[in-house]
Amino acid sequence: SELRCLRAELVAARRTAAASTAASAAALLLACCALVTSMPRGQLQSWYLVRETPPLKHLEPDQHYVDLQELAIYQDQIADRAVGTLELQDKSVTEAKLAAGCVASFHLQAASVTTDAITDGAVTQYKLQPGAVTSSKLAAGAVTT
Image (cartoon, rainbow, N blue to C red; front, side, top):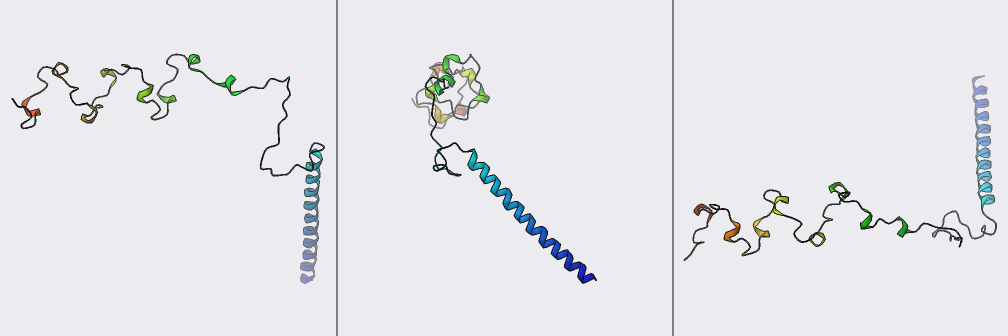
């Protein structure tokens, strides 16, 4: 009796699986039919489900289309101080983009100008504070007569 029940359950399971497979196949077939019938007439032979290039677009001559020049933002459209540090990428401001004399000494952080950045002969006596140079700051033999 128990064996008979197991056999009946196995037969029912096989019927269910066969019906489920048939239903899945039918659903797939219907989806494919819907896809094919939704394609424009005359394009069925040239249409692929996966394309390497997009289909050509046909533009209407009397229709206005937005182009990149209309979307572009030009320098005269940007308000003063509208672009700040957060909007600039690192290293996007170069020396060539700075106006002459726009960076003054008060703009520089402490110790931002190193010895390597100072041109020979650029520091003259008129640029030194009184008492700024002491004998302890001079290398031995640096001052000659």
